[in-house]
Image 1: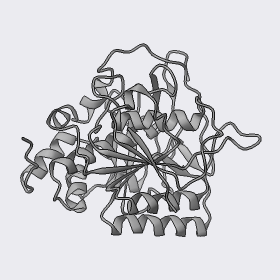
Image 2: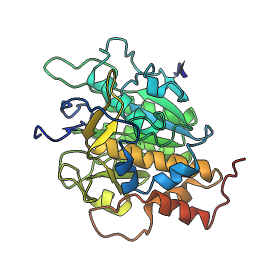
Image 3: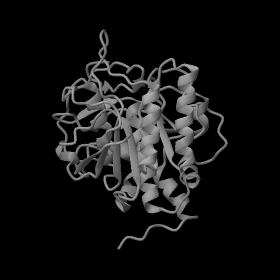
Image 4: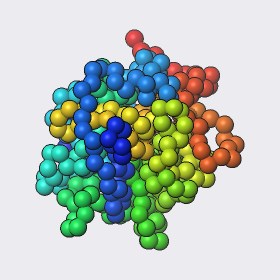
Length: 333
């Protein structure tokens, strides 16, 4: 059930899903669909130790995940049992086509988090409440093929999600040439989220460069680097000091999730890696509801002393075991 809340390329490789860019969205076109049975994303989940944690819980409705992305196809059959709320504080998405890149992106990421268990999507934390705050809601501007959002729109969306109760924020976005003012607005919004005890997860980006941006540089953000099925960083993924020091790696290759509309899609990109980390954090918080944000982050990030620009892979089960040693777990009857 979804409720709208009104608030103030080789031919044999999967398509690279663009990470939505604040100001611009990197272009990519899905190569098509894949006929999949349930459990198609098991390999991706196993890569980061999620199956045993998912076996314990599907998530708690008390844990709210904020998805700042494109609109989500709320009528998708694999989302019909998900607890989704839409914050309608941004522009209307009514002008978008059902198969627009913005809607495809939002629905794909939503499937990774809240899809139906046993379906084609990873469906990491469908028991958690998902707050969707569309920021890519308008048709592409003249001369472009991708939607965009202004930095101040993202900053406002971050604050709205946190004020609506989100404890984990998923940002599959990247900055493109932000001004000093833009960076200040985003920093203030991210500070607001951290100050309210939220954990922020952001995609590192798909440019294959060494560096960071206004989002991933923030000390409260967990940058997520895309890893391939071989357990190594993908060439497309950005790396850097921020990601190496306090980031994580997660699946970004051959990831299958929901299409909007139609059959499931299999795509690649760091946009897909971020929700694996977001979902793991949501499950951990569901199991350890009294754990402070710092403890949750400490468990997923592991040892604090790192010197590489390449972060380690997420180990969700290792994080659960670390928290089990210090935190009382939620008892389910």
